[in-house]
Image (cartoon, rainbow, N blue to C red; front, side, top):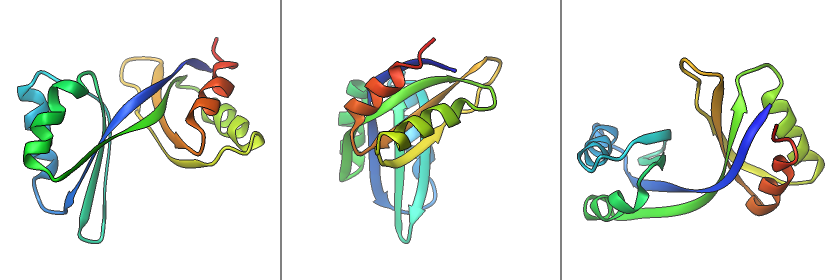
Length: 137
């Protein structure tokens, strides 16, 4: 049910929430030829957060820093999981049983494929990667 597990880097844009932030960031990425592999966006009060997994963080970090004051890269666990009932159960139960706290998780939906990407920020990303790697098939 888990096809691969790696440690990845996620770009986090934190800025004042206003209309057009997603459009502006996606223009920057498109102009640099960077593909967005996964995205989570949300607001907290007057603040907006966009979390990106891309195929070219280095190409866009400087461009994003020119436009936004708070840009960071954070380490995440990226797992390719099958699009079947129970795939999330395997990963979540293994982390629970080993007392690894999931700080946040988001999953891409598959389109014309059998796999989704699950992006996790945990209390111990290295250990989470090792544990989940035992289920790679």
